Picture (cartoon, rainbow, N blue to C red):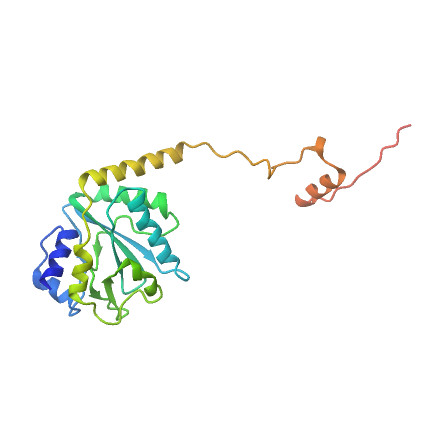
Length: 240
């Protein structure tokens, strides 16, 4: 238990939570929500991917986790199931940052990679895995990313996870250095600025917005008017 608590503190906890309280929580004797922020500062960013049809929530998490590493040069995040309705990514910061800066980073990340996913940008209070989800009776747990898809339906474990295995998942993870976080933030900001500045695309020649009468046949004109809900009437004018 001490090894697991040590890893949780190394990665995510900013304040020195009561050791006995953590033990009760991790053993499922009680479930507490822990505030990952203190005095407006935090060392952890948590992202929820809510249950969707099939494995879409898992696939989306994988896309974002891969982008964090390949696009932004950040270390691999921790992955967990909540025991309820979501997967979670956990980003650990080497140094505390303001909760506002963390919110800005998450907002830019959300805009760039998973804008259609509903998330809480300002949340800092969360149930720290491993723990018992009171409503479902399932266990929230850190998981091996290679096995995550197998839990897409339940999003929790029926039995409490092994403490040493949980600690082993966490001890392999690295905190995001100050330099790496600044680089990632700058990359996201530049991408966001570039997208905002990009001109609106011109209509494709393959999908014209109107009908060029000089090139149109009578059949073309009739079809075009029908598409607009207009019934054409053609009259011949006889000249004297």
